[in-house]
Image (cartoon, rainbow, N blue to C red):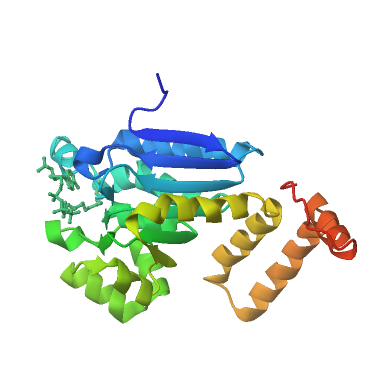
Length: 262
Ligand code: T3D
């Protein structure tokens, strides 16, 4: 029996694929789902043989946010703040801190904290059946799970405000137009097309990708001069990797590089 109750896990071709597996609830998040995702992110951070992650959903949904039945069964007086700090914050911060590429393959409805999960990923590919909604206002909550951080940065503050305040659904084509997703593909091709990208990224110089991710994370909140300074600092690190030596050698020998992620 798998050690995970709520997610399916596949590790092959240096890619770790996490499939949220509560299809009857559109993969809504419970504490167990969040805990299992965090455990896998910790494992991915430690394992050199994992060089790319894919997060997707089983069935017709990607993730419908907090499981509202589980929410209702919480004890009165339980602090939402504590719950967020214990469950969703570790999930999204670990995705951002993981120095490996993380792709969301958004196969269907993506709402609330599920949107937060997708937005924390580096790249989003979506099925043409995917739709996005902030959801929070629909149940009288303010936005959380990092959505107020990512959404305005990706689609602009006015559009973000509109989506938060109206809870309008955004179909896949509109999501692509506004920059919410990188690419939309027919539903039956989503996993294969995502896998193709994941394979490419898993064969890329993982350390350089990780350093690039670190710089991108930091670039969101610093001046141009600070960004330049940080890039120069990280480049010193990248230039000491085995993959840098291999990249330059392969170029001069006129052959494809064989990057090992070190
Ligand atoms: O401390 C904290 O936890 C606070 C943090 C909160 C973070 C949040 O995420 S708040 C936002 C929570 N999410 C929502 O409010 C979304 C609720 N769901 C929907 O609005 C709709 O389901 C969708 C628009 C996402 C999809 O609609 P549709 O028509 O495709 O599917 P459906 O028929 O509504 O759902 C299918 C089933 O999934 C259905 O169950 P049933 O009737 O077949 O037995 C539905 O109840 C279930 N489901 C969908 N979303 C959730 C859910 N069950 C539990 N929790 C859900 N979030």
